[in-house]
Length: 392
Image (cartoon, rainbow, N blue to C red):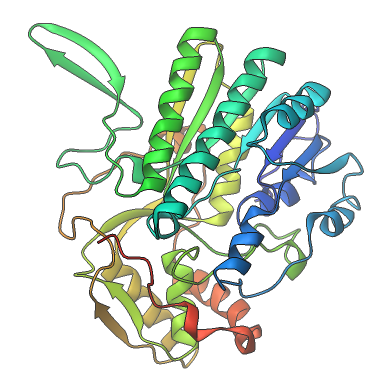
């Protein structure tokens, strides 16, 4: 599946904030296969933080100025603007100049460990994430209220409540009366808390000023390949595997290949919803196609499968055996403050109803990632994998 639009659909101006990131770049590459005008925006803050904390990704990718030239072979109507989305006037000027039909908002610091590393990192997370979201809301409200905001949230906003996690909303019956509310949120880090605040801001502006917003509650993402057409290293995302910016499945695969035990935090009974990066792109394309009406906030729980950390580690161990890599699993003291044994049943039917065809986690998909890592095995830095951010 190419995950792109029907060529007969009208062309749009689509702005991607955070276009240099793990999701931003493959989303831009995928949309380059359409006739839409793309405005890519980034200020390279993630690259700055990688360097500052010594957390360089597996492969150092060229900057967007260079990579955009690759995409222009498919779509000449692509531009890149180096802008800090937290700079209010610069961002408002950029938005007013282009007046996009859709903005895909990835321009946030997506790391619980970073946000809990120390006071400065915590404040940087709150400051960056809330300012970027508020500036985007202000721009849409001021210059183009028809613009569809697609905001990447996180399943971590919900926490681990002892009831089913509904898809964004909960109907409450109390003393004979009934009201539909945003599902109660209880994030486990400052990063997740900043995302909760994002959702609250968006909901306020939707109901007060008639904005149209899709908020995607995404689980941890894994993978590198985005589709068959763009199956080459130059289209793959920034692959982080460290303790601060890496996602758990990618980290496990790197650990196995580097002959480091797969480190499971605490009991390993923590359950989360996961999805392949191909499905992230597919979901966002579906969100673009199915825009909400004015005064509507649509929320989707964006994941395809639920696993405990133990199950995930075992899946990686079994898959790597098929390519003659014997990975061990080791439990270590949990650096986080989180429930390690809990009920978890999150609903996620919304995207399937729109047409999502999930790419499920199989031995083959794990091996596909492993083959990419093996190709760059000499670049693995073993010193950046063990946790160094502690909640207490």
